[in-house]
Image 1 (cartoon, rainbow, N blue to C red):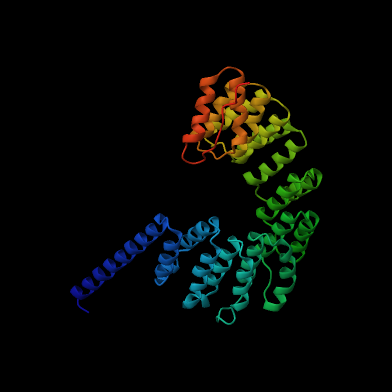
Image 2 (cartoon, rainbow, N blue to C red):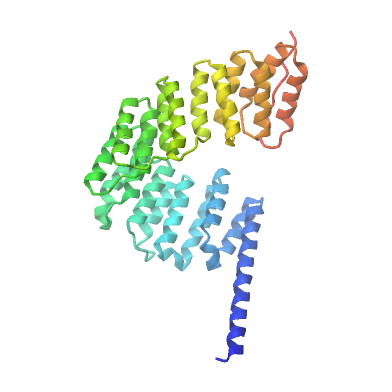
Length: 380
């Protein structure tokens, strides 16, 4: 091939590649912007005819999420069943994606059906498929099914359970409240030659500390240190929740102080744990101080932050602070229930701060993300 021909070929190939990329990008943007869910389904099915489109996991996830939030399960089935006509379904990664999407939509029966159909679709089932099915159980809250699949399918499929398999099973046990089974599973995986990781331990820590089984959780914490598991912020937050639950707030403060020496920074969950602890003790100044520190840290307060602080401010009859917190709620576009803010309106009126109360009522009506019907109390 002459130099001129090669140059022309490269130029044409580059142009086509850029064109395809532009077309795919425009397709994706069109789907994200589409407001009509029925039209979205039709466009998605049409776009799926493109192989490159079918490689874009994010588009699938976002589209199915939107339909699931709207409870359009029939349309989810329409989209995902339509994918079976493509050759991609014979590739395990593609089938696993569909199983997972069904699971996240709460459509476990459909996920299981596809898992069973994989041999007919000429798709091999490895531990990845098994893990997808276990994950679909957890996502669909079919926690009781996990142990049966975990015990039966490895032999049936001739596959060996891996770290993801064990972590998913442990997650299911924790969600069911079967914490002893979760702890036993950690021991079982070690005997099977599968080394627990930080996700394994964090899952168990969250459940034990969150269920007020502080001493059992401390044993797991010690195991992590003995095994030189690199602790992350989630590990520390789990222990922080436990310490606060034990009313050891000062120890919790010390634990947060340790974070910097470990190369970690507290996040909103860290601050919320301490704020909740001080609120439960009725310590307004302590709660307020950590709320200020939260703001200085660059973390953004969330629903849990305000759910703890606003009732405390009302309990202490500090309606000026409560009004400030309500302004922060709107400034951060934090979603809330009217029952959280109505006591603030009532308290402001009781203290003859009518303008502030009216402003709060108006903000409840006029915001464009979480409108609520706050009411001025009737005059007696």
